[in-house]
Structure formats: structure tokens, C-alpha cells
Length: 411
Image (cartoon, rainbow, N blue to C red):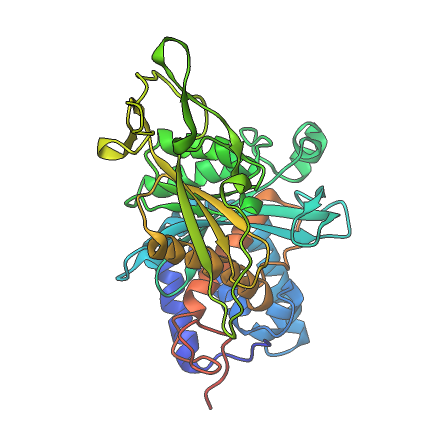
């Protein structure tokens, strides 16, 4: 959706919002260009390039050229810290509405050249192809309204960090190293949890390279989770516990998909999602196993969410979701004691996150950064997140929908 010049109401809202989010910028000119960049993301039509944003802010070509240089300096050259602004965005994202979940998303941005910071070749799960791209993991705060981005991490391969000259040209800090997506997500969770009450983390397969490793990291932090796993992921069903030597309980691992035999879907003009769950043990080895349950008792859940006979192993649940039309199933592992409606609500938060990512790309410049600076990328992503947070709340919207939209002149 193409944007148009902001109305006076929109310009005033941008000014107030920018002063709130970027109040910790040390210089007046930094705050002024933060406001200008934010306004450009909201008002520029089409691609949010520096030239297009400058043209939307200037009164003529000569002024646009000067504005473009200033925006370039603010994003790629000015050494401001993006983290305080992101903390403010997280405060605003929670707002008066109850937080349903924290959610994660992987963003893959195809690129042609080799100089854009972070570009490398990787498999894109959305297209099923290996592409040259930038890749980033985002953390979102999801309410019953939508999901708002509050933090970002850029995925780097060793080619960007092992070459001292390339690292220096991209201004990659010395303490930044290549990490898997799940480890970057854990770091973002730590930063958000330092200032906000913990919420369940919902992450799809594309947002983490190793959901079992991520589950262990979240468990150590007492962060509840609902994580998508592959159908061939080994899990240990509670009801298949067997007694080994010395009366100890052994858990046989089986593929997740084997716990949900395929059923022919009922024909319906309006198929509804089908969600089925079964208790499983946490991923990883069982510690301190206890005696086997009594004959005929099975391995039913014990008190306080543990497996009878294995007090150190809390019961998890594995959920399988099918959209009701016989399509592919997706599998989710959780340590939450949620029933099916509660899990569906969390899965809706994941769907809202993907919708937000799509809108960030189409309307707010998520895909349009072409700079060579690591700090510039973080600056741009912070402004993109701020533009989305503001755009959904401004009164002057195309269509006036509650989900936000591109802004236009109300005259």
C-alpha cells in the first residue's frame, strides 16, 4: 500500500511519538533526524529508500538531496545506542492490554550484492531455495490486538566476523560473533525479561534452528514456551514408559508424528483447525528416575505437573495441529498447562506475528535497508519498529482499521 503525505494531525503525532521513543538521544539534531526518518517511513510511497523518504520530506530536488545525506548520516554514521529506544517500544507495545505472548519470527531479505551488511547464502524455508540474503530474528510482544516488534538480531556468518577488514568496514563490534538463531533469540528474551514480566515464548520452526536447545535455555530462565518441532523430532511419551533394570523408569523416544495417527478429515464446508495433545517428558535425558509405577497404573501425571515415579520430570505436552482440511500437520512442544483453546490462542499470536512481518515489509521499510553498517542496520530496524507501533495507533489511516495502515492526508 503506497503512503501519501501526512496530515497535520499525523505530523504532530509523529513529533510527540519521536520525542517519547528517542528522548535518550543526546543531541537535538539526532532527535530531529529520528523524527524525520520516522516520518519518511510513514509517508514515502513505495520503497523506503533514502531518496524516496527524502523526497517525501523536502519541498524540491535540491532540498531532497541535502535531506538524503542527512538521513544517511543519522542512520549509518551517527553512533547512537538503539537499545533505549527499543525498551520504550516494548513498554508501549504492552500498554494497557494484557500481553498474550512473546513471539519470534525469522526474516529473510534477498540481496544481490555482497557489500550489504550480513549478506550470505542460506536456505529460505518460505521458498524452499538457497538464496543470497540478509537474515534476522525478531522478538515481538503479542496482545489480543496484534504483535509489535520490540527487538532484532542480525544473523552473521563467519565470513563477516573472521575477516578483520570486513568486520571493520561493516562496523561490527568486537563482542559480536556468529550465533545460531535460537541463541540470538535467547539473548533478546533476556533483554526483554530484564524490564518486563515474563510471558510465554511462541516460536515457529523457522525462528530457531534447534527448538530442543532453545527449550532447555528457556527452562533454565523459567520462561514458559510453545515451540514448533519437526514431525521426526524424538519425544518421550509418558504413556510408553517401561520398567528397566533395578525398577527404574525408562522412556522410549519416538517421532512426534507417530503419536498422532492420521485420521481421514470429515468433509465440511467450513473446516476448523483440529488440535490434539498428548503428555510427554521434557526434551533431554530423564534425571533421577524413581521407581516404576504400580502395575496397571501406567505413567499418569503425578502431583504438581510431574510424572508419577519421576518427581524431577515435569509433564510437557506435545500438540499436533491440522487445519481441518487434511493439510500438513504442525507439531508444538510446550511446558504450559494450557488446554486446546489456550494453545490455539497462542498459535493465533504466532499467526499475528507473521502478518506483522508482512506489513513491516510492504508498508514500513523492513526490506529496504541497503547500508553496509551493522549499527546502521540496527538503527533502521529500530525506526521500522517505531513506525509500525506509531502507524497502528495514528487516527489518520487508510480505511480506519484497528490494525493500522499507511497514512494519508485527511484533506
